[in-house]
Length: 489
Image (cartoon, rainbow, N blue to C red; front, top):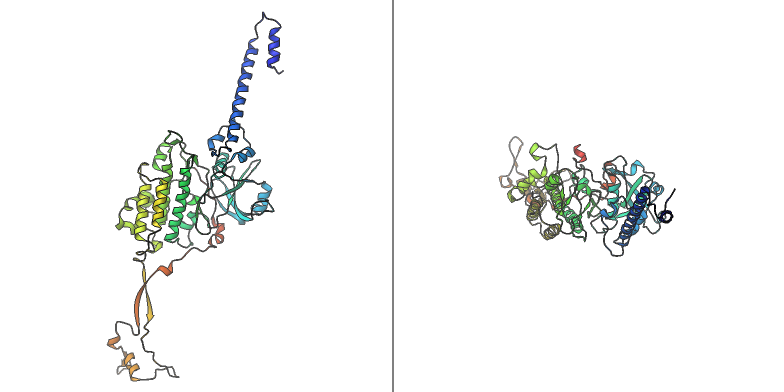
């Protein structure tokens, strides 16, 4: 039986001498409290949906309240920034990926498997034909619905040349899938560390560093700052011309607001990249990202992974081994990647090493902001490689243009002229040839010159990623909880 305000008031008025029953009073109070709670939830939901008109970016906390039941359509309509996310059905994803064929598998991370697919305007009107990366949530993996939502909330609103573009999503029963732009050169991790890949030239490494730094600076400078929290080489994706873009926002957090100085959160990330103060206290700031950037910059300089148990004990942690040498220009050669063969500007490399040293400070205050990092890296682009070839030369022997050419007779022997015989030397009594002393030292008609190795610099093959796409070259790598990289497990 359902009681209403009207029935209870009428029931009480029939007998003025009798007070309302205790259970009626309790029911009235409960119903009033429920109505007030419903009104509050309705107001909060309307506030979230109306924020689009004010062009204020929605934060993850706006959707974290489980009592505010927002459907995916509400979320898509409330996202700001001019983005339009396409909603895909799971059947459409099967068509795009050829039923998730193994040949289209690009890789697999903590979030789940990633497949290469193709979409055109016939499948989705208004969407241009293009290859895409389809990332499916592993229901038994390390990440879940919250990380999936974080990707949509952040990448659905944040647009920048150095952030990977989120095209759409699939939310169908238990399926949670994200569709991104396809990055043909895969991750920086694969380009920098994987075997049988061409060595990244110095200029390309600096281009990648600047692009990644600009992506981080954009996140830190937004009206509501975003802390990336999982900056590492596997989350930096490269397009065909090595433009770096940040991907995988599953662990991203909204930065502190107002007078707050940090965000307290559970420690998550990848060993070797997380800032020491964050690991010890759980206090998260934008300076935590700066430290992680310093680790990646050091990897670009050295060509070594941040953590590697296969190295000698003192060198297993790249930061602990290399940081003390970054300030000393005389020790720069011990740090730099030997695969570069000296093909870099020593002055520019020293500046980059000093920047990495500052970013890797044990305390957050001495670290530069990402805006300052971008400014310093931009200044390095003007450095001329006048000393780039000082340590790498090779000997090339060319013929002497002024040398005389000995005529050859029909029988293949020399013409026997006196000048030629003198040039070839004389034979001793036993028939052996004696070298002319005047020609000893220059090996006859040749001389030596030294040339730089500039023509030997090898750039990566554009088709390299497609060739090795089945080897784990994933264009969308996913963050994992705080643990060792997959290679170390």
